[in-house]
Image (cartoon, rainbow, N blue to C red):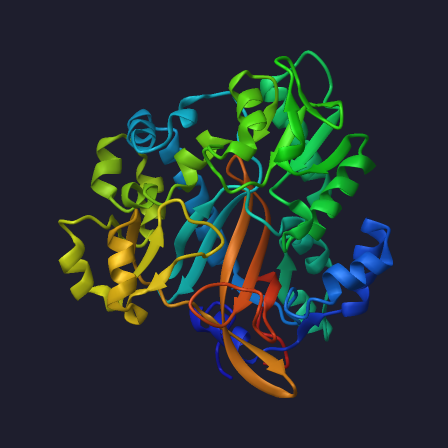
Length: 432
């Protein structure tokens, strides 16, 4: 193999051919057991799920990693522009107009790598998986020193950064007293696929002197002054519900407390409206409009990574149907890759359902490939990259390896994967 580490094709080669970095399952089990304090829980709720963690790591060049962080900065800069906010809030629910001050924990920026560099596929609030990916990254091992020197992990001080993030969210809205109790809130939390990370998060908060509970929103009460869970006041809610407008009846107490300013809610409806609503991709992929709104040139350049995106409307429907093979269709308030469709797989019936709903059409970007070994055989799977961020700063990078139209945890050899950022200035390893 004659590629140098600075050659863009080198990263593709690593993801296709290199198995020199792999998951140390025993180390992961020990790390999770130490954090959760319940070995049986780890075995039954985490390690028994064969497709939760992939055994391979994903390689990303330092240049591509830098390009992704530039996109994060550009999106957040765009979302601070008054005219961008006006446009985004125009199609958002009324509750999104409430501004409390919190910046929004665990934003998730999802990318595909392409020959033209990283492409931003979407942005998510309350992005799941960070608490699982931190120990996963630490449990990956290189087979030899040359490979170990090739990459660096993006896992740096994750735990203190997370604690600092939540304390800052509290300080942005409350300065009268210290943060004492956090509620991790999701619908039927124990039934959620990622419930184990709620347990990891609660243990992390408690290690740092912050009480933490995992709560279904139906268990919350608002007494007009404070939000309560089990009769105890909740200071801050780490929000994992996907009712982004808090419109469902089961979320009434949480909504009321938020509107009254009685609890710090993060992320909240405004964060979703300004950063994660899929309709915002139509704004972010229009450089001329963003330039007219005052976005700096460096950010305009970074946002070339956003595939062109348009709303599906009665006026555009026929042209989009004709061009469907080059498009990807997503519901504007979607989450977890639900009800998303590749245009080349559309049936007329599904297309009619799309046209009757609120969807965007995005220029399709082919996901990159990562080779995995399953039952002794090598096969190519797809992967995407996620940057977990806070207020524009990257906390952690992770990948999801999968097969099919979208990410899932049903693929043999797939699941969350650690991201190894390699330095192009270093030569390729001896095994290359």
